[in-house]
Image (cartoon, rainbow, N blue to C red; front, side):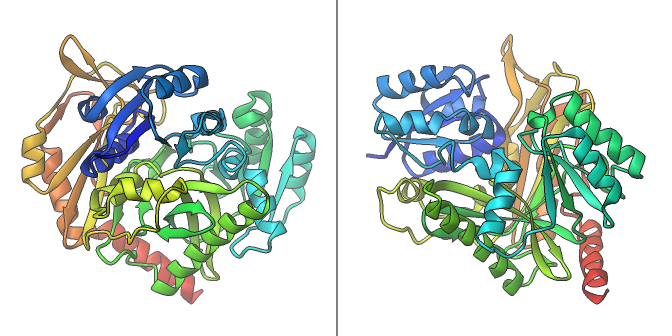
Length: 442
């Protein structure tokens, strides 16, 4: 008999998690705002409600006698869903509101890293006052990144020399954050890190971590890393768990930073359980912390969960403090994820386009499909305003995985959509390798 588990969230990240739970024999009770057809197909029962509707979620969990809970997105974590479920005796493989502050408050995260002398921190300053932030940025003698302190769905960061061309644009963006109350209307100004970004996620049980393969995400909407930042257009992982521009030693440093943050949270009296997502910039001085998230990355969850061989239920039990440490194994395969997104995504997305998906054909060409922002309308699947469908190509090499991903994409028909076809291609990966060579040599 598998575990009875409540899952919260309705995106492709949660579909990948539900699929992994289902493979491990779990009985799934899913909460999501809109019905994700992939999650629905694997669930015993579904509740459609806002994902931060704590009371309804708790009632649903209680009425169905669930033993465990897994929360996918950041909003319900920030709303305290885990705290409420834990108070009812349901064991959660996700962090409490206090522990999730490593994501919900960038200032909390930076202060914690500084307090405990953890490697990888960047120079930073936090501001509640618009004028003080503006004064600081006018005086600072190094390039900076401007970030709202709170949650912005991964889209709030702007960097000098990238989205911000000069000081005037930097000041204007700071004023915009305060005036529009973006991410809580507070600003953190961080030293700009030069290098290549990568993601090191870990499973966490309060005091210890189990690492997942490295993944590289692609935030920019358009090919060639152009256009606005998005929640992530796609990602890739390699068969050896590393990335073509990251050494085993550099990866270990990132794992050590994740572990040090977990130990620091435990000392602060808010032990962390669940998945922790470390986003790092590999610089000439090693990995630097860009941000820490209190959940799986999206799209990165699709890379790692597709290749997970160990029972996800056993990992959940360990994270929740109810089972032994599992021997976590991933298939020695490379993966490439590409998202099909609605036209205008990243600026002003257009919903309502019919999308046809031939799952069997996709599976036959060495790819897997996960549903995101799609819903049923008169028996047909229709796109929403966010990322619609993730396709994961699997192969022995990144090149083979990318080929299989592209083969799978041919079986998705949707008029008003686009894909970043360059993700996982040799040309783009070589650009990353050359960039890191130049930085290491600088």
